[in-house]
Length: 82
Image 1 (cartoon, rainbow, N blue to C red):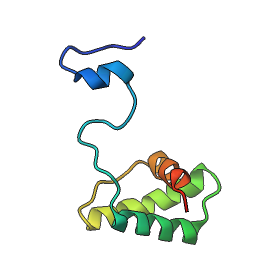
Image 2 (image 1 turned 30 degrees about the vertical axis):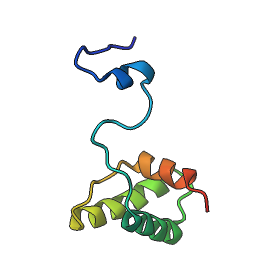
Image 3 (image 1 turned 135 degrees about the vertical axis):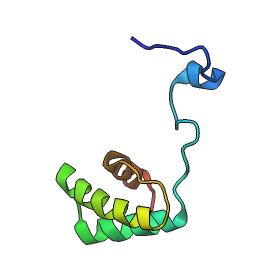
Image 4 (image 1 turned 45 degrees about the vertical axis):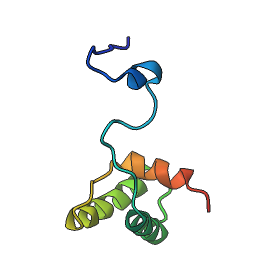
């Protein structure tokens, strides 16, 4: 069951897809670090992506950047076209 709140923007109620309001796009610096960590770890499963996330979260905190969830890092990496 999907609850629609009265104060939600019209676009968010209409589709329910996409990013949450206020979510920042990945910067080039974030992509470079994510690629570096993926190349180093070569994650094959959830545990591998959690190792990437742990290192990425430490780096992002030092850079005052948002810490992404491990599943979002994996998803973003798999969506990138080289």
